[in-house]
Length: 116
Image 1: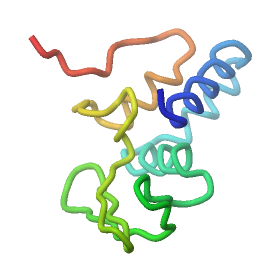
Image 2: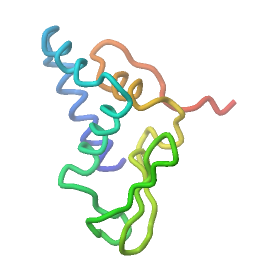
Image 3: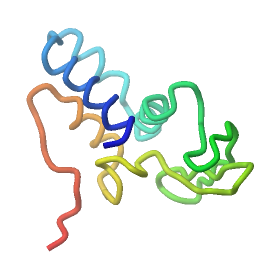
Image 4: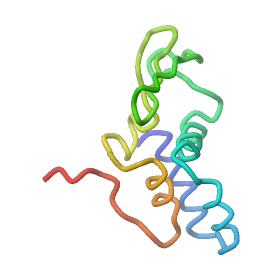
């Protein structure tokens, strides 16, 4: 389990156990688009800014030719994404749906692709 998974689980448990309706609606209003969800996941995975998982360099190029941004380290050229090493890796679920489902207090469903 990655640090991102632990942080997301902690965040989810907090909101699932202690949130009231007004707080939940306020939280939901933050995510009106896919870009909002991507920005949330970036902050959750790299709260102090990007860090290359291979060399710990702090700067990356953003490759935005894909639906989900890809980050390439300036130093070692390693490529990583927001979902790499998480439960959402290899998921085709849009990030807006993924964030809402992971944080919804009463609704859960699988984000993994059906491999059958």
